[in-house]
Image (cartoon, rainbow, N blue to C red):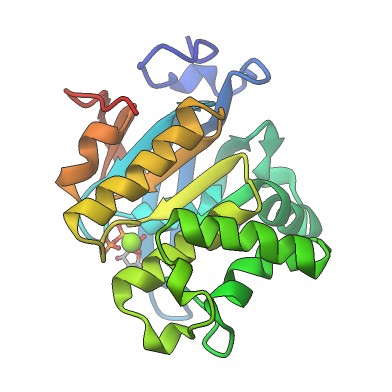
Length: 256
Ligand SMILES: Nc1ncnc2c1ncn2[C@@H]1O[C@H](COP(=O)(O)OP(=O)(O)OP(=O)(O)O)[C@@H](O)[C@H]1O
Ligand SMILES: [Mg+2]
């Protein structure tokens, strides 16, 4: 049953109209369709995706390049809209939110780690990490204190006043992760968060994500190709040709 957060089975289509029990699932999506359209080209990407991710879990989205992982994550993160389907994130019906509602979701509940980092070049590491808090109106001294804590947690204390142009790709990735976590979001959506990290840093970042999910009840959805971090997942969804073709739990779960 879709309402059971511990059941791995994907929801059935005839459950589309059924409401998941409040609080059980952080993400519940049914039959998501998305096609990119320009005046001359249509690129169908998602052709009926179902997802059910219980709160407090770390779920991975895997699949070949071009299979729609970033597209799906962006839809869950209120950055893109689906063409059709039912999507509930933290109990909010995304298909019914207007633009203000989508901005509020992003600002208040979602921490997004972008595949290409999207750091602001003219700002220091500290100021980049403060952005989600200043957007919420958190006073600067408080914002900076929280930002420093996160920057330290990702191992970049000595780079706090550096600019992104002077950082390596792995360091930029860690700044992007600190920025995603600083607002204490209930849901973390991370697009290839370990792609630019070496094995040790990748493991540290995933250990941090697992701590946030297992101990603080947050939910993480992580897009990855990185086989080294698969043991950190509670469940893995494989996306192919616009559908989730396989779902399940990885063989060995890492406990932190
Ligand atoms: N803004 C866009 N306009 C048109 N087509 C797009 C757009 N963004 C993505 N696509 C296309 O949609 C498909 C899915 O792209 P997406 O970025 O979601 O894949 P992905 O699984 O994240 O790939 P990768 O692993 O390479 O990051 C690709 O064919 C891509 O070219
Ligand atoms: Mg991608």
